[in-house]
Image (cartoon, rainbow, N blue to C red; front, side, top):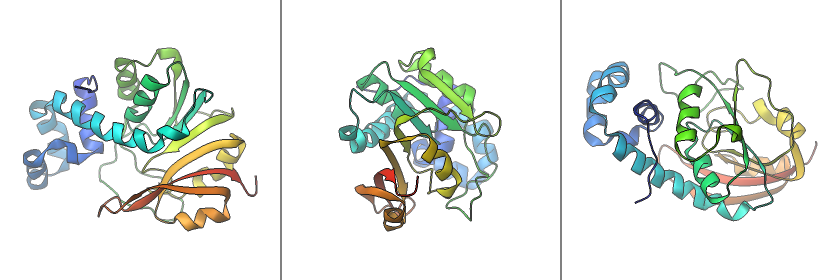
Length: 234
């Protein structure tokens, strides 16, 4: 049975990021008692970390399968924007070991869950960089492979990436334009940029190559996953 090794703190954070993993009963309690009490008390004493690890691995494995064919052994530098604790990257690393992973994240937990975005704002976050690093190391990623950048404090890495991913984050919770200039600087001609959007056609004006690789019709996450390369105006 494939699963993630989950420290208790990581399980609590993952459930905050993905409430569906809490299960029906805990979701009902959250609805009745509120998010604060749920996050600070219920998840501390009543959460099944092993079950969360199994279900989270299953979700991330399915996400991995949507992009697996676009990853090769020649791809060495990966950039992830808004990856949560990094479950997808942990699975990529298990299948393509010894690569270099860079994560751009915010290091705080918003008090209120938000969906969608307005303008270029990026004011929400649901992550802990300390917990993220602990999770990655607990799931077969070596410390020297992990490069975590605090969006609010650190300089962004200025290297050329082979693959850039941002599932249900970039252009889903905040406008793609927030990162567009930066991505132009760190992309090569064949850099593969993968993210979810509700406006796939829009990106044909921005990239020479745009391919839809997955369509989601879920009420909350209705979107298309696209893989893009070559900015038209670099």
